Length: 591
Image 1 (tube, rainbow, N blue to C red):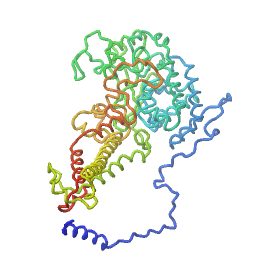
Image 2: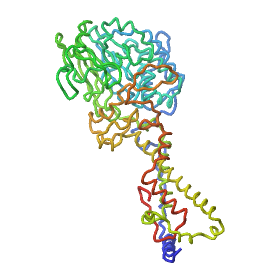
Image 3: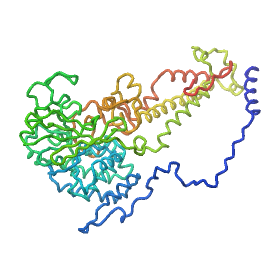
Image 4: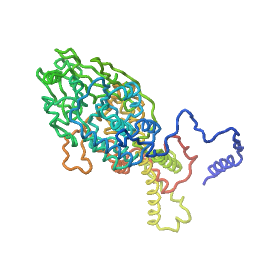
């Protein structure tokens, strides 16, 4: 080592030893300090204990055990959970009750009609606050109670508890998300396994198959999750189907859950930004947005209503900025042919939309809107904070190792060849080795440094995956390519920094509206049509590749940083003379 460099290092050591030490302040606890109090007293602590049987269940006048819905409401508000046996009891009892109902349920007014909930339990509580209690009101839900939100099992168990306690005052219909196919693809199965067990998830799937698929309010309004079908000529066609099954990708059951009005509904024969005009007489078109089922036209809706002597179609299935949309009136009754209602405000914590419900009483329809409510925070995929933070810690550690090893200046790394005169930097131990042993030793050193570089790239991939699980890629938004990421994690329930309004969120989440294609576990020859925009992905997959494939790609790919690391490894393995101060450690990047 040269004298100048030796003086440089010694000076740094002297400054460390001679630096004035600052004693840490001694903080003595105040006598009045209460360490058992919560930092934010207004936020109640989560319910740590599962309820006792006498708390959760009550005996009705017929001597039957029923869940106490009011207790369950407060318990879930505090993020409490049930025992597996308690959850299974509610699910099994609700399945038996729902199985006894017809495919098409008759509902009498007054009634509150509600759209999609999507696991937003705290907004569901706001819905009942706006709509009124079940002692004075009846409710009709149009499906989609689970998936996308973080509290799907709470929504389902609470609604089932209400159904058991008030069997004639609440009607629950099936949505397209009430199936094994979508719940395995999106978040509900993952949620059930995290909060309960596979047995609870399987019981949920059985209850989904028992849900009725449509309702008739006062013999005037046809209420369904999706819409009508070319196979639905009369209401008797609906009464004849077998609903106790997993919906396929075609057929009447699929259409009732998946179909939509055409984009320019009521004005299909005029050119618009949605596409070219539809020829007169067209009733149904393939639903390209969903990847299955149909878009029905204004003419198809009017003819369906005329054939069956109905006033209008009330459905959910689509997020709406105002929480609802009333479509063009029928030519004869002068009433909106279709009404869409969506009851999940600020959908996915990103849409900035309002929720809405329909109150129908005394032959009058009233729309009530409401905003979203705050809710507890969940990390993506129900991960714990330690697991989620590991990639960030690993990436920083490997960056620090590379920065410490980066003793070469940029000028030295740019040199294409190593001067043979550098061989005089060998130690006495090197002089005792043969040239072959020296080359092997250098290669071992080089391999270790390259391994650090590869690990740095792997942790970088894992860190980016953890970040992208909670927000959309800002780069994709800037480039206008909102479809760059596919699958259930493209738009998650966590923050989306650059989404400014409903339209931004709608465009970025459009691909998740499609019927995903994958083979559900344990089901052979499941009938799904290809949907190119969606692929079966694991919870950690990104860009259509599994995490294992991503790691292999990261280990094999060559980029600018990989080239720098390789040259650095070559320099250190050969040995070098110190030619000035080592490069400084950078805060956000390695040398």
